[in-house]
Image (cartoon, rainbow over all chains, first blue to last red; front, side):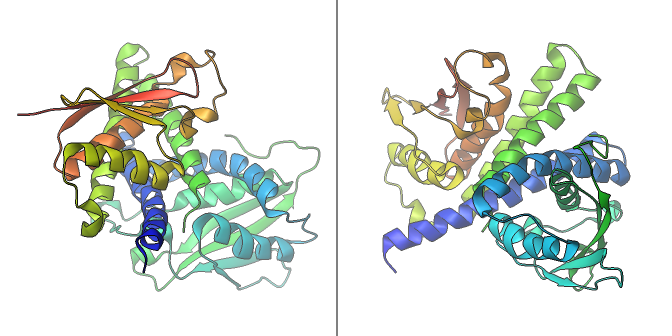
Length: 180
Length: 161
């Protein structure tokens, strides 16, 4: 492999590692700043929300994706376009509810948790909770109120990492749903 | 591969969160100083870890100046998708790295308007540089200054024992 090609790959790897390491440093700091895991989880969700609200603009500008007509289309866009673009992974979509208002995103690997082990003292910590906030914030900006939560976590010994997404309602007139 | 914009947004949110938290605990200059130290410390640990993960072939540096060039070219390229605009040195252990359009400041607009806010957005990166240098065997003090957004200078002073 030429030295140049090596440098390119190295650069991409460093860029991904930078994010993963920074996220780890953030979670560590939050665990110091807040007394219990629940509060850390809330902060991660809130920060994720704030990021999601901005990320959606970047996404809409770069992805050329049109308006989604239903939740199924939304699911496809989230998994196959957004996750791919931002995290370099494509989760699979499974477990649709009969009403079509809930589905699961299954991540075989999660870039946020490379090199991470959860100590026993933080068994209630939802390490990647930022992602749930990002999904919630981003979708709110396209008029969808959703709930996102982790139901399986590889970091806690589960086989895969699973985020359950639930459609709550359509948002009319750009009124915000939740607090920031 | 994680898209660079994700790091940028995470960084912005981190600065906001730590700032708010430390200001709540200590509304005066003490709280602000804590936030800057915390951010710098986080950057330091990330820089160290990044440095540890670099392949050995990439690190065949003959001298100190080569390490600084590496930071300006390779580290900056990987982290900010651009190279540092200039590197100057007095050849006595002080280096000034200049970025005319630092990505973490670009979101804040340009000119003199948010000058006061700028240090918050530079602390992590100062730590990052210091941490990477540390893993490469160089002890340093890294500070940053902004004359007008989004241009900034990082000053690296090598600490010799």
